[in-house]
Image 1: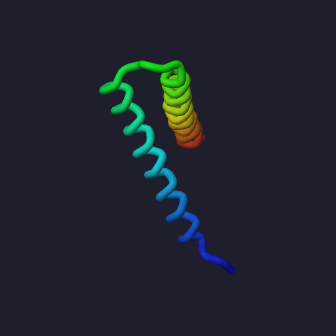
Image 2: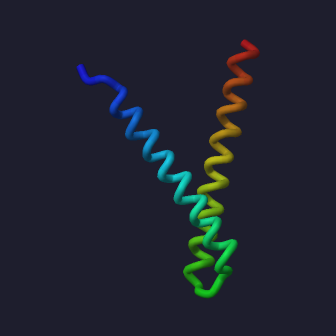
Length: 70
């Protein structure tokens, strides 16, 4: 039987990579502005990812509150 620790560590590294990527994207757009059409598409993707993460956090909070009220 395989332990879950290697999978948890890989997941944590992946999450850290996503966070670094999002921060780098925000810094890029704040410093360089918009010069090309692809910048707008990349900004839309960045906004979608940030919105998705915020929505998942919101759903988790609702779920925790629901469990606590049982």
